[in-house]
Length: 432
Image 1: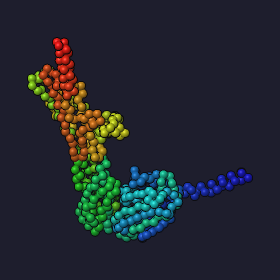
Image 2: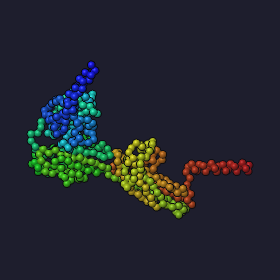
Image 3: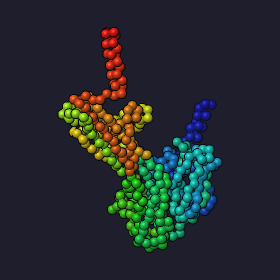
Image 4: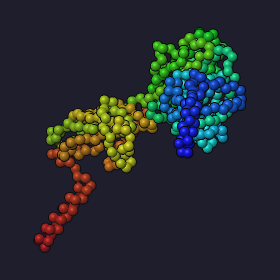
């Protein structure tokens, strides 16, 4: 009896295997199913699907891609668009929407668990722009679903327009918005300037009324204080001579129907930290009593010192920087000199809103009193603030007193007073 059951199970598995392994027809983006009209609903499955690594951008688009999925293509209707699997899926779904072209996709939006374990996305569409919808799943989840899309337009029947998708990124995590402009030598530009509010979530320029193959355009970002922009142009019309530039994204001989992209990366500019070292010789102090040679050590957190070195994984506590950040966030530099000296050190902030530094003197002569305005004490060592477009300054003062004897601190003066009182008391008892 048991052997017969095992035989039936084995036969069932063998018959089901081809079905389980069969890839859906729209497993690859090149085979994306076109959806037109609004609303439109289509049934599908991700069982047997694979991750389309050749066309899917790296990283995440709001939510990560961890398992296979299937592709659908829609065209913008010029208003709000949405796609959802709410209440119509047998598994934990995810949705991701891209614009652009296969191999040069640009993240638009994504979602996981909008309605229970199912997903819903919304975005503002550009008329006739192509969007790719990837239906996939959480972790390794796969199953069947119904996808409903609203707001989609019809596929363009002509090629009398070109699109330029623009995204921005700040390398230090600055969440600020930027304004970008599109300039063309001919054609009609719908909205010549646009504002990008979030990294990775871009805007699209549309140009119409031009002769195909005779349009030349460039995308530029308006200057952001404290940052330098780097541009990368992609697409069929990208100028290969300037596809990676600091001046803008350039597109030449643009043809009707071309979809191009421009990625803008903003990096903080170096700022100056000015360190002044001064020596004072009050009264009859002799400058020859001690050497005026000095050595300083500068250390920065979340900021890179030009010509500095990696300090390693430094552990600090309290209100100082946390020790859990990568070691390369700590950089150091040694400075030395003689007499009154001014150092100007270039420092580049690496994490928004900025980094912090301090400077200490090492091996100071005990006959010199050091007043360090470049470092705090204990948990507040980092007193110099650096951020995009803003540096800092400080002064370390060495005071040499008569015959090299430094002044006493308030505690030293109190101790001296007690000693003097003690001597007086002993003298009084002796002669009383």
